[in-house]
Image (cartoon, rainbow over all chains, first blue to last red; front, side, top):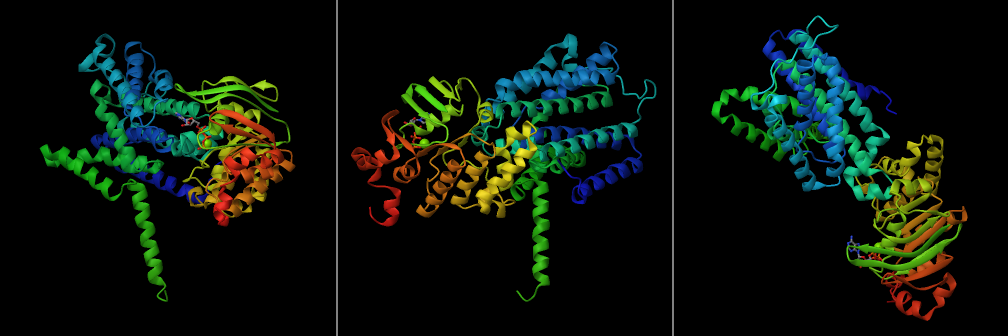
Length: 325
Length: 247
Ligand SMILES: Nc1ncnc2c1ncn2[C@@H]1O[C@H](COP(=O)(O)OP(=O)(O)OP(=O)(O)O)[C@@H](O)[C@H]1O
Ligand SMILES: [Mg+2]
């Protein structure tokens, strides 16, 4: 379907060069951890963007699937000694199944009600993580998650882990783009625009919404897997309501319905707290102010906003170049 | 081809369609006329699977449509041009048309999609010119052509139209209805819901008159055009008359 034109490949080339050079140049484990965290958030934002930006279905509980991926993989590998690489498909399956079961009734809702419904899912899953201590370790968390290795022996160092995370992001980027440009992506956009009209045309709206919800959950579970084995420790707070909201913010700030926007939003919202440490107790205030400013001046999100400004500049300079008008 | 027997539709406790029977034979153009709120759209929505919980019997090509969802009904060969057009404004004209062929694409019938697209673009050349433009930027008449084109993309054998003349100037109304005549001559069966009774009866073979959820009159288009009750109720103050300054 998608013909790889030069125009499409430029952002990818830029992406690969950026990720590659950062990976080779950086030499500090702390920075690697942050850069990998950006990648994990990017994966989550991409997943949520498929659901929100393209299909127009909001989820305020996406941290639940992130958490299910992390806990499932942690449990299977730490407690049952399964190789993490085998735990991964199980974690994806678990998140997908939960999404299927809760998505079926929830996606019949729309607008605020869907928001409330998914919020509820997030809460319930969070409470399960916290209260089912015998399995999840409860509020104090789950320790001793084995790190990832390749070929059974060599463990991945921070640099390789960084490359692993970003390779997964690249895969998710390409996959998302392919999906969006396909017949299914077009149908998702039609649902976003008007579900009633899409139904009238004979598009299987309920099924498509459920499918994209499950896909989004499975992608989030992969992010959970990457997080759990990178940090080695997980606790319910990493998958709380606040995190779900942050994910929504990443998508909105970056720009809905834009895969590069999801990346930008993830980078910004991951880096911002790190930079804002300097503001100490005012951190959250400054954080909030920045987000508000972006939304007031670039309500379409950063990507759209930047592209619009760029287009405006170009039109202006073109006009300037034609003094006759 | 389409046979509806004793159809009853409810919105909660409100009954919008009260035991309607009607039929459309293959190759016919049948029109359904009636005042606002008489249940015309509700009837079309029941045929397309957009209304749940109707009672009675709807058969298409001798098979019941009961319990089928809209995608399956489209696959059976029925397409709807919904009331108010319901195109997808931010999507391009081409995307809108492709969405109409969703079920064909799904079945991998690419060649047929290409042929149908060509046919639709020949039928409405303006859509070819505007293919890459956002559908929301089309004029009202062009949007109606797009809505019809989108419905045709599914290669229906029965086309249902819900007030395609709504809000259009008389010239465009005749252009749209003229297209329906062409389609019918090519063998398409058409069920046309209209408030513009005169225009509809001029192109249709037969008609049904709807009043508060019931069929009160039926007959050939010629008979209905001459009927005193119809004249008084529906033909006296027609859109056309407003435009012609006769009203
Ligand atoms: N979603 C709904 N909920 C409740 N009542 C409805 C709903 N849709 C339609 N009705 C009622 O059902 C009756 C039939 O409506 P319908 O839309 O089928 O009429 P119509 O003949 O298509 O009218 P119009 O010519 O104005 O389009 C009306 O009385 C209307 O108020
Ligand atoms: Mg109606």
